[in-house]
Length: 147
Image (cartoon, rainbow, N blue to C red):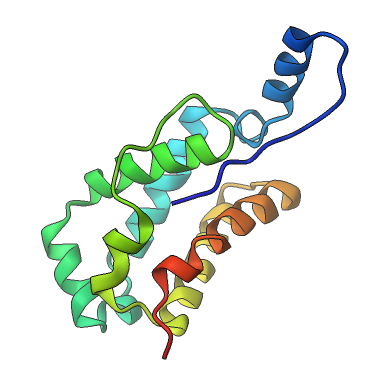
């Protein structure tokens, strides 16, 4: 779902460069896997029951078929990987997993509002919030149908 985030810097030793990149990665600045999984869990907990999103019959049907813990697992893996962490996402591509949902721009915008609210609740700093939003936005062309 997300594109990889890379932090480049000039270092004389490759091992030192890798260590610096790991320390500066969005993954590490977010606190690693535990905080990422908590934020993802809270996000899914507000996303799944959202009345506006569930007005879309395809989204509502998907909510009935796909258990929230499954979504949490995959989204945590995606965020971990996209932020420079050690996880690897092994699920379907964004277009394949969302095309049947006919997600509109308004529905996308609602999801972004919910995501921002969860990030704010967890006091994710502005810089990291923007990086996460940029990653999420990179997936929009594969998820939102043009209407």
